[in-house]
Image (tube, rainbow, N blue to C red):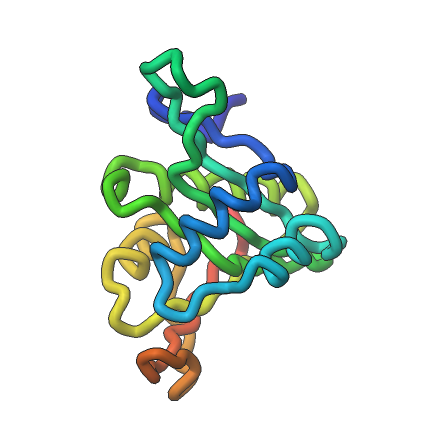
Length: 164
């Protein structure tokens, strides 16, 4: 069963340490308080619970041998819980199914690893992300006041339970 259909312009694959510079560039472009290289590297190589996926664009040109990373998703599977940590998509590739495909693959892997619920925090002002999660079946379960910095902002807590 292929429950994670992906448009042919990109593919979702596990991240590798060699992809770290591209992941860091995307992180810095997408977030006002980005994770550092050291933080990303720790998630990618030293966290037994972390899973790291990238969406790679298939290049038309033959001048570049490696496909371009257009999105990534870091999530943890800790026993029965899938925790969505960071999701980023290159600005020019947003609203094309990349983020949704990354979330869908994370949910699929969560189910495969016997997770029964998924949780996440998202900036209260991030309407596109909140809508993406809601379309996937997440519901708002609370708020964390002043959770984010730069700018200071509440986090909206969202959950999917049971995981489907």
